[in-house]
Image (cartoon, rainbow, N blue to C red; front, side):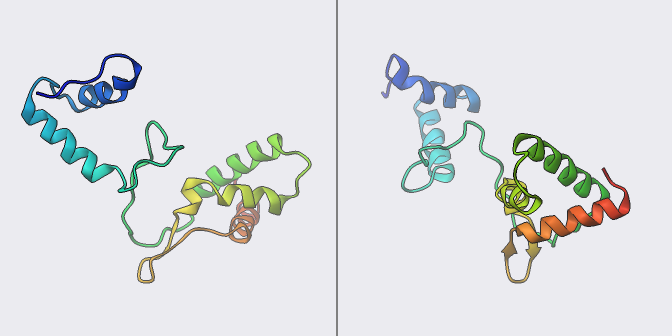
Length: 135
């Protein structure tokens, strides 16, 4: 029968059993944990900076479009970044925004599997938001 190590080295495994609602004393539950890890952990193991709650993996879907809510969110994020980096120009801040998970995984073309928005696109959408009076 397997046992979870005592102390801090066993804490991640105890937390996983708890999160999945499984009992570490049940051998069948160990098989479920192994199957879960095989499905969710990359072959080389988790990356060193793997977040506690990684964002969900999104499947390729229809291309996303810019509506008022998406532009409002972009304007809000831009204003926050502008407050944090007051000396940077708009394009530099858009480059920082383009690295955010939401804009990096934005579906552009389903057929070609193209994703991600450039800083220039974000800057154009900011200008469009200002024209439409979204702030």
